Structures are given as C-alpha cells and as structure tokens.
Length: 203
Image (cartoon, rainbow, N blue to C red; front, side, top):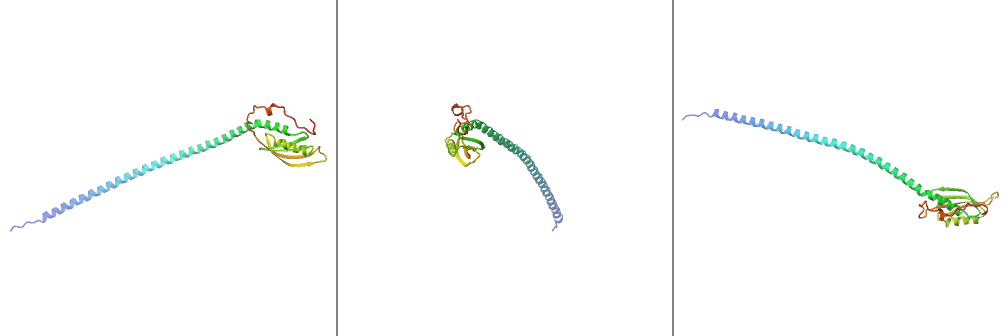
C-alpha cells in the first residue's frame, strides 16, 4: 500500500492561512487608523467651526453692547430733552399766570392794608405788611378766599407796634390756576385797570 506524505501540504496551508490573517490584521489596522484619522479630522473641523461661531458670537455681542450703550446714551439725551421741554412749557404756561397773580394781589388788598413783602415758593405765597386794624386783615383774607387765583389764606401773626402806623401781620396763601388760564392773550380780569394798594385808608 503506497504512502502519501501530507505534511508539506498542511504546512503550506498553514502558511497561507497565516498570511491571510496577517493581511487581514494589517488591513484592519490600516482601516482603524484611517477611521481614527478621519474621525479626528471631523472632530477638529467641528471644533474649528464651533470656535468660529463662538468668535462670531463674541464679536456680535460686543457690537450689540456698543449699540446698547449708544441707545442708552440716546435715551438719556431724550430724557434730558423732554425735561427741558417740560420746563420750557411750564415757563410758557406760567408767564401769563404771573400777570394774573400780581393783578389779583393788587385787587385783593383792601383799603388800610399796605404790603411790605410778598414771597413765593412754588405755589405757596407769604404776605407781610401793615394794616390799620385786624378787621382790615380779615377783609384781606376774605378777598383772598374769594379770589380766582388765590386760596387757603392762613394768618400767622398780627402784632401791634407803638411806632408803626398799625398792626403788622403775616399770612400765607396758595396760588391756583383756574381753567383757561393758559390764554395769555385774554385781558386781565376783563380788561379793567388794576387798583393799587392803599395805605391809611386813602383812596
């Protein structure tokens, strides 16, 4: 019976399998390296893109901050301008009121009363003067109370002095602005000539 030696064939097959395994391992290694490199490139690209977006956002935020500062500055300028306009409008409205006020003061002062001082603080008025008697002061207060431009008379003090012509007094009142007082073209109290203050009952 003939003998067949299979050892060379098995050895060749073993070397071939080993070669195939080495090639497969090398291919897998190359594929893994390539995949890792591609993943690294993708991650680096994503990081770079995100950094560019972050830089763009930072620049836009800085731009918005500057615009907000400009808007705030414009808003402050607007508020100052509005405040100035309100002051101007208030002065324009109060201009005819001064004329009415002085005319009213002259008309409310009765005979026998002489004013020495009139002080204004906002809408508050303080009158100081000399009267022949307390009755004259009471008449002055009644005139103020019935006036269109003055109200709330409050007597502070009435004192008689030996060397004075009468009793010195001090009283407070509040200024009011009746409806239609902004018409500075209207005649003062119907166009009548104002009466000057009198002293000692002399007409």
